[in-house]
Length: 291
View 1 (cartoon, rainbow, N blue to C red):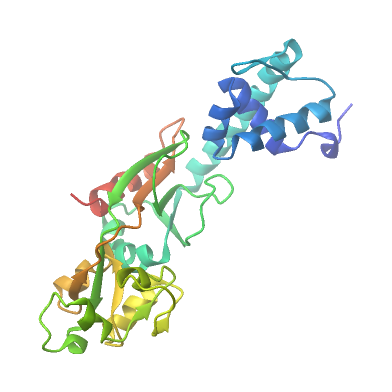
View 2 (cartoon, rainbow, N blue to C red):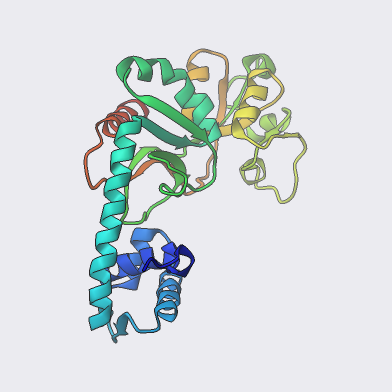
């Protein structure tokens, strides 16, 4: 007799059970899955309600599988391993590597280096997704991500610091004119200010409330406006260093505060080697990591 698919437990509940049974800890399961401990416990309770029996014994310190839970877990773990192997095989066949980066990183750091990446790894079909949204590596089918974030990270992720969020104020030399850098705060205040989604200027001037100036929803757009001589912008040094070196922008002063976040390269720990993914990961570390 074939059980209808609609009668099977939800996949999220089965995932929570498989990881919890392997870790014997809702806390460690939450770290591996990248969700809260309460969410894992809730999914396990939903599965127990669906099955009509308990899967775990809740102990003062941790959890333990019941006899029926242990029997069920061995089968579910085997099923997930089959799914993992099938997914790995399909991914190996596809040859594509998907990298998710922030829009500013894409335009200011990645895009100028794409020809070099293509020359170094000609057999890799690279797919780029530009977004600031937090990626679910499985749901979004992302292999590598670059994000402005901070540790700690889930134990399921491999992470590497690329560069610090070193903020500087920049402007076109045509806008600055004869003013010698570094500019004072009063001199900067006299320039048109370009705002982005982070809106660092109020903190730069220790000013409460809105400051005048054009507003852009992305840092890269504010920097494009700065290159066009339309005003001064604040951005991470890594995004403007090439333009500073080329004389298209001038560092008018440094920002004396930190956001607390930096840029990291992230991916899921791999159960098996993936040659093309490993090659892109190594290339990103060699070309994007500072120092």
